[in-house]
Amino acid sequence: MLIRVDPEKCNGCSQCVRVCPYGGIDVHDGKAVIDEMCNLCGACVQSCRFGAIIMELPSRDDIDTSAYSGVWVIAECSDGAPKKCTLELLGEGRKLADALGVSLEAVVLGADVGGLGPVLAHHGADKVYLCDHPVLGHYRTGPYADVLTGLINDKKPEIVLVSATSQGRDLGPRVAARIGAGLTADCTGLTIDLDERLLQQTRPAFGGNLMATILCRQARPQMATVRPNVMKKAEPDTRRPVNIESVPIHLDERGVTTKILEFVPHNTGETVNLVDAQIIVSGGRGLGKAENFSVVRELADTIGAAVGASRATVDAGWIPAHHQVGQTGKTVQPKLYIACGISGAVQHLAGMGSSEVIVAINKDKNAPIFDFATYGIVGDLFEVVPALTRELKKALS
Image (cartoon, rainbow, N blue to C red; front, top):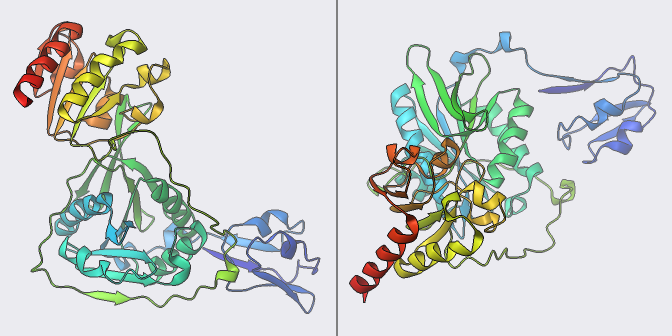
């Protein structure tokens, strides 16, 4: 993406200088001049009454797709280690790179993140781009997008994968817009069309009632945000070679408009993190009312599980929203998922279908969830679940 000033139309009115949030425009000799602080936000383009500032997207007809190669994973880290969602992307990215016969490369942005390079390499990255700078110490959209946009334009990967976390959902679209690429959001499946070397990006559509597979035939790179807890994470192999490239970073804190004042921990009151839980017991509309969640909680307490819920129960006000599992809630991948009174709508299955073992308890023998369950119990949950809880208490005592 390019931005320029038409000197024939610019009269030096300074309106663009006043609206630029990044201080990237000055007036010299009666004409606006855009400098390296420009963030390509477009505020100046919209404010110019004379049409003197022009933002140009690269023509897709001019893009040489053969110039792009490699699969990239944009890493997220916490407390000095890659997040689980990043390891999942490395696992899936490895399959895509091998199918295309190209390298898998990871990009890590942050401050003092040098120790992450070997970890990412051991989890499958053939090369790690290390973007280490104090300004990148905490995630902020502007500087992260600046660095990543420049790196993509320089290295030209053909595929870029970003986790569909709060950070990834903010960063991915911003970068895609800047480089003129398409982005498929919230993907649950990725494969390669080997005949055309295209990334097939599958995601829920129309409220989860169908799965759409999307192709990006012309723009490069092909970008996707990928839902966490759907893909299998990469396992470490310390025998893998470590290839790290340090990327020169030119950032100035004075040019960053967002300032972090304080971090306030978010306490949901959960004793177990739903996303990371190994065992989850979930309740659905079959519970009938909020008070009946006590049946689910007693079973969960007995086996050290987290409590989940369907959207219907959250919408009914029976349980807080942070317990919701499904397309519009949490995506989970526990070793054991026990569904109590949940019919198995496709929206719910999208959030827990990757569980290792699914146990369904429902009095309706035709409930869709039985088609996906490892084990199914057809019966009244108010009889089955308490009986199961009693037997488990005996076995665990």
